[in-house]
Image (cartoon, rainbow, N blue to C red):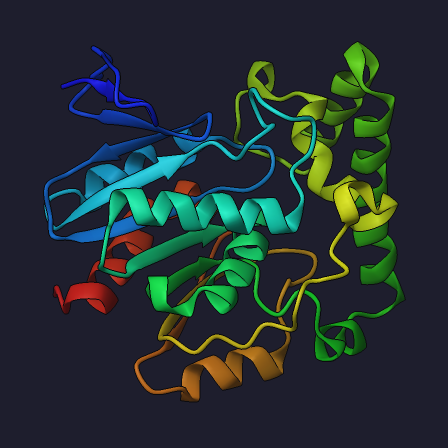
Length: 279
């Protein structure tokens, strides 16, 4: 296999059965030979490697596509919401021309992915979302007490400031917070540049999320979340709405935020059951 750039030139870069294409400077790695295409988006402080186990579990039935969000390893220091949605539109056009994809989202991948799905619904057949639901709803804000609000503000502003400070100090601040949050990502892979979504949220970097719409998806959704956390990133109203929507479902698992790492067998079994009816 080979890497194919936008210009059509090729260089041999197949690794472990994966093949890579480049879309406007972003590498998109594909594995599996199924007709259905699943585009996987990670969050903080992860890379496409978050989905290693999920790709292994699903590649017999689907073509799994994943990328590292721009700026998390290389590329611009921050990517605006509009630019992210445009990039995802270009990626979908390349990996699944004429056929909508299934989105699989986690953390900030949910926040960017929901906006993409609402802006380009024709390109998304269904969504699997992990641990972040109606993050920008009044219902969630009303459910959070003072403790939850201060906790969220505390870690997120810390990470936004770490991004603003930059350099080795910003990275040390970021890794310290990752340890405190019990993030499973290898610390040496975590840098302050992964924090720019928090700078967008709290400092208005790259236009912030002023254009973000309330989450109302028009396609089936499987929402999976960890039940053992200090606070949730969804409201009870969100769970009820998803559970009652035709073709959609909700699944809580006894773990924290990184569901696919903490409970991989249960997570993958639930996803396969929802996608394909596998027992």
